[in-house]
Amino acid sequence: MGTDAFIVAGFLPAMASSLHVSTAAAGQSVTVFALSYAVLAPVVATVTARLPRRRLLVAALTVLFLANLGSALAPNLPILILTRVLAAAGAAGYTPNAGAAAAALVRQEQRGRALAVVVGGLTVATALGVPLGSLFGRLFDWRPVLAGVAMLCLLVAAGVHLVMPELPGNPRTPLRQRLAVLRRPGVFVVLPLTVIGMASCYTAYAYSVPALHASGMPLSAASTILFLYGVGAVLGNLTAGYATDRWGWAVVLGTAYVAMAATLAGLGRLAATHAAVPALVGLLALVWGASSWAQTPPQQHRLIAAAPGESPLVISLNSSGIYLGIALGTTLGGVTFHRGFPTMYAIGAAGAVLALLILLASARRTGR
Picture 1 (cartoon, rainbow, N blue to C red):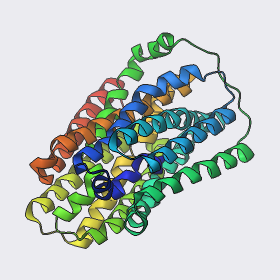
Picture 2 (cartoon, rainbow, N blue to C red):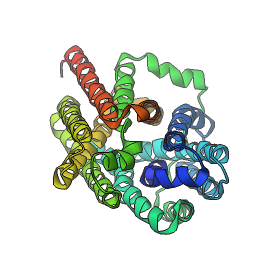
Picture 3 (tube, rainbow, N blue to C red):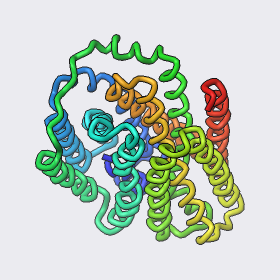
Picture 4 (cartoon, rainbow, N blue to C red):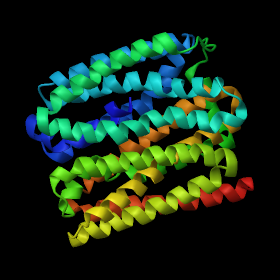
């Protein structure tokens, strides 16, 4: 799921060239996927509420298989965009329910770690899928790479069918009634922070390959840098799960936003001077990935604590917030693409500072 969402960043320039569009235009395929996911997640959760969880997850992976196959065969950008919308529908049926299932299968005191394991799938995708997509995109073209992602969806669907325990569906609740949970103060205050935090880290991420090149890094180094970002994402996510259980969400999120702001400011500085030092860029990428994906476990933990009887719903809403933030961030990146990468990084850093201020205000209100 995560590879499908983010792999395009690894071969964006090649895709743009193949489809005869600009890099900024091709980058909007990431935006469309993210925005469609954000809109569809609560709708899919409502329509599929009664389905047993294992059957639902297998069906979602099948939809993702068909969507990626369509993307691999897309002759032009409009067809590619349509297949990305279909892929978003499959993702909207999978990711929130995987998180809710994990939370249901463990004791309450292990919930943060269980959620980190599920989100770890997304972070492993950034660690391996995206840099491998960049490498394979240069070796084999981007279309076979997306076809390979499609085949992986079938493989994982078989694994889920064989391994996952049976979990029943939930009572069907009208969408309006489901969205009423947004009126709960403990829920309403969390979701905007998810949007802002993810927008901050993804303003530059979709355009990271040309951004790194503009900083003085050779294109051949992009796979290594993206791999380091992904390693940081895995470490940040897993550490955040354990740290949330031990020290609470406020400490974890505050640390993540400070690190994110400093890292993006540093990358912006290197982009402005065109004097990138590979070791320094790699270190900044590692911290960037860690701070980006350290956000999700504590945010999910906060939502489940605020609405324990609605965990599948609030996790789906948080997933919508994640992808709405990614859509907002990639849109800002596309708009500022021609203004230069220092501007793009500066907007991301400013967003991280804003997220920190909102966090401090909400922590004071709740006494954390």
